Image (cartoon, rainbow, N blue to C red; front, side):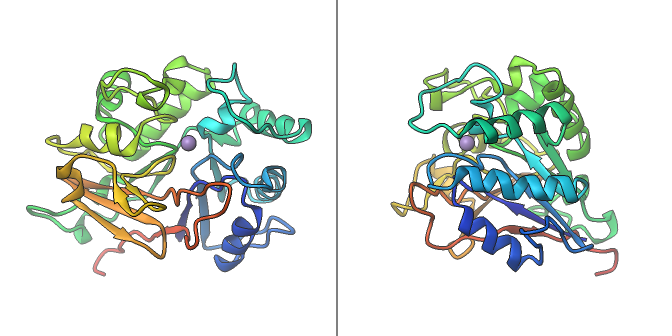
Length: 285
Ligand SMILES: [Mn+2]
């Protein structure tokens, strides 16, 4: 099974269409190849010119392949699910709005997904190794260490964390939507999984703590792809590697890694990006 994590789309329908086709999916019919699971990290809409078309394409995948297109909620989708949390210049039309609300009500749009880990026999071990046996948690903005510990009770696997986050989401729990420094909140690393800033909250918060599982997220990045500079603390910079063609950053922390997949689209799409593809190592590989 291939797992492809698609970062923030930001209303760029042509980019999404091309990337899904590259992965082997059919955006006209909503069909996906049998060996592919797609996770889209949220923020489908706003910034670019074609938000409604993006919602329509994703709706075809969710109707046709609901087990293999896992749609996460971003802070831009959340604008339509509850009282808007911030001022934004764009709004999608009534039809797209109804589609987003329908996904949330039907459980087709969720807070988190867990990708499988590698069998213990094949996982790297020892200092600097990755404890990837416990899976990869995917959320919009990432799960901060403080939220993991205080709001979730320190779950030990990505699947347990995803279940707990999705249960809170089904109850519309306020903690899921808790803002952080990006909305002028306190700098206490407690931002929720729709709002954590990668460079200021998510990554610094996991320094000095052993990560229970790997993570992937969109929403923001420690490296500013447009300006070509880091916006985080030096210790995170020293642990981060960049994939410029893919628009991915990987921060190697004690016990695990955090992969950022937000390509940083603005009104125009980032010049180059692709999905982050995760294949668990098979035993003996
Ligand atoms: Mn976001």
